[in-house]
Amino acid sequence: MAETLQLNSTFLHPTFFILTGFPGLGSAQTWLTLVFGPIYLLALLGNGALLAVVWIDSTLHQPMFLLLAMLAATDLGLATSIAPGLLAVLWLGPRSVLYAVCLVQVFFVHALTPMESGVLLAMAYDRAAAIGGPLHYPVLVTKAHVGYAALALALKAVAIVVPFPRLVAKFEHFQAKTIGHTYCAHMAVVELVGNTRANNLYGLALSLAISCMDILGITGSYGLIAHAVLQLPTREARAKAFGTCSSHICVILAFYIPGLFSYLTHRFGHHTVPKPVHILLSNIYLLLPPALNPLIYGAHTKQIRDRLLETLTFRKSPL
Picture (cartoon, one colour):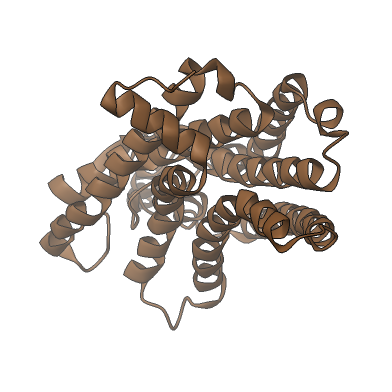
C-alpha cells in the first residue's frame, strides 16, 4: 500500500517533464543540429528581414504586403516556439522542462498552426478580390480590414486551442514523466496519462474542421481566380495574373504537404512508421515552411526582392 501511494505521489501533478528527443538515436541525433540549426537560422533571418522591409518602406503598407508581414510574424513565432528547445535536446541530450512551460508550449504550437492556415486563407481571398474584381478591390480589402482579420484570426486561434492545455492540466496522475519527443506536443504529453480518448477526439475533430474549412476556402478562392484569369483577353495578361499568385501557391503547398504527411503518419502509421520518423515529420512541418516562405516571396515578389536588394546594397530606388 505504501509503495502504491509513493508511486502515485511521484507522478501527481509533476513539476517537470523530460524531453528525450528522437528515441533510439542516442548521440547520433546530435548530427541533426546540422539540419535544423540552419533551417531555424534561415527562418529567423528571412522572416525578420521581410518584416523589417515591410515596416520601413511605406510604399509596402498595402493589404497584400501587410498580410505577408502577418505570415512572417506567425512563422517567426511558430519556429521559435520549438526550435531553441529542439536544438538544446539534439545537442545536449535529454533535458527537463517545467510543467507550466510545457503547457505554454502546447498552447503556442497549436495556436500558431491554425493561425498560419488562417493567414493563408486571408491571402487567397486577397488575391481573389484583386484579380476577380480589381475595380472594387480598394473597397473590399483595406488596411483596416487586414487589421480586423488579424484580430479575428488571433482570437479564433486562442479560442480553439485553449482546451488543449486545459485538457492536459486536468489530469491528476501521469504514468511517466519522460516525453519521447523534441517538444511538448499535445498528444505526446497526453500519452503519459494513458487514457487519451477525449483528447484524441477533440484533436481529430479540430484538425479536420480547421484544415477542411481553410482548404475549402483557399480552393474556392483559387477557383474564382482561375475563372477570372481565363476571362482575360491576352495570353500575357493571363501569365501576369497567374504570376502574382504563384508565390502564394508555393507557400500553400509548403505548409499543407508536410502537414498532411505528418498527420497521416501520426494517425494511421503507428505500427508501420518508426517513431523517429513521426517526430522528424512533425518538426519539418513546423520549421520548414517558416524557412521557405521568405525565400519563395523573395524570389517571386518583385517589390520585396527590389527592396531587399536596395537595403543590402545601400542603393536607393530611382524616383
